Amino acid sequence: MPVYAPPRGKPLGTNITWKIGSAVVIPLLNLISKHDWRGVKNIPQSGPMIAICNHISYVDPLVFAHFLYGNGRAVRFLGKASLFKVPILGWILRHGEQVPVEREVQGASTEALAHAISFLKSGHCIGIYPEGTLTRDPLIWPMAAKTGLARLAVTSKVPVIPCAQWGAQEILEPYGKWPKFFPRTKVVVVAGKALDFSPWYGKEDDLEAMLAASAYAMAAITSLLEGIRGESAPGTIFDPRSSGLPRTGNFKKKRAK
Image (cartoon, rainbow, N blue to C red; front, top):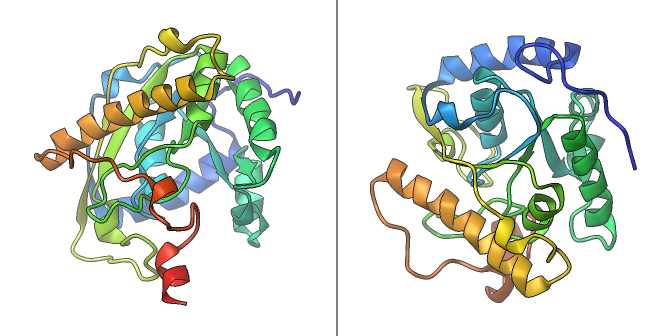
């Protein structure tokens, strides 16, 4: 089991990589976007926590991290391992103490869970996209989630803060290559009240229970997103497992082949 030092600095969890990175990235984000942050009182200012959010664009991790950083927490994400192999970016991610996850590889989720639990035991903020990839929903609503978040929540028993964001897809559309810089795009991020996973405590090895806990988490995110968008989500939740689409990666590119 890996061991991590307790978070320090302000925002909590900041290190030298975070300080340098934020000094570069935040002004760039402010140049191309204007933010509307809501529900910030729901973000714990100390102690372990898990922040979860919908995933709509390659740029939204920066938006989500900015939201958390601007409200007291430097987040540790569970991110796809391929990003850590990219020159320069991989170095930044490793020194920013982000956690690589080998998607769709047997045993990888157990290793990622061990890292996440160690961070939480030390008092850090962990960030997770429960869907595991960009949403495949045609209207960019949250889709059915994997069970990793549920297992981490019931195992760690720390506060889980549901968040929703909207606007990043206007800066860079899902799987897009070229961002829109002007005019500045309004991005909204809202944090809700901590979720209660106690009905599923002790059931982390029960697949049906974890699917139910995952659905509970995604329903909370979807409800927050409905408030941002001012409309109701479709009655049927998009489930990639029964869609015939690949579970991860750019399904549009793969389908075109």
